[in-house]
Length: 193
Image: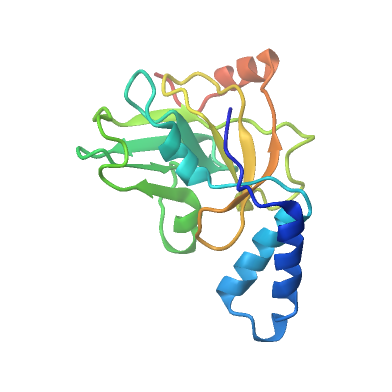
């Protein structure tokens, strides 16, 4: 999958990160979030705008979003479309309270003009052990090329949000699912077509 990284020269990121560190004693929450992003880039990490990438990649041949995002501890993702080119992506669990911002992604009307008006489901990719976080899986998300026909995905990206609700994400890992992993996922998918 081809995604665009935030492009800031590394030496500039180091300079800005140090600048934000000198003002830690009276730092606002926004300052802390900016510092975190500069720190990640300064350390050579890949940072992307995942939700913007979903919008940028647009619709597939079936007039549904090409990319999808879900919390890493979900097994399935629901796409609910609106009649005005908007949609929501969320897991099957009821979304409320503190978990809402990590389980529910809303794309406003007009975001995907021409999108087909129908609800769909997709399988959330399996994370192999060498990439899977040892704990706190609920703090991570997966971005992948969605196959809205219940087929297992191919090349997902594991992300961790930098900040509370923004669209800045640290790329933790990327992998291609093997044929064995895809076959087992197909046998254990949480729903049938």
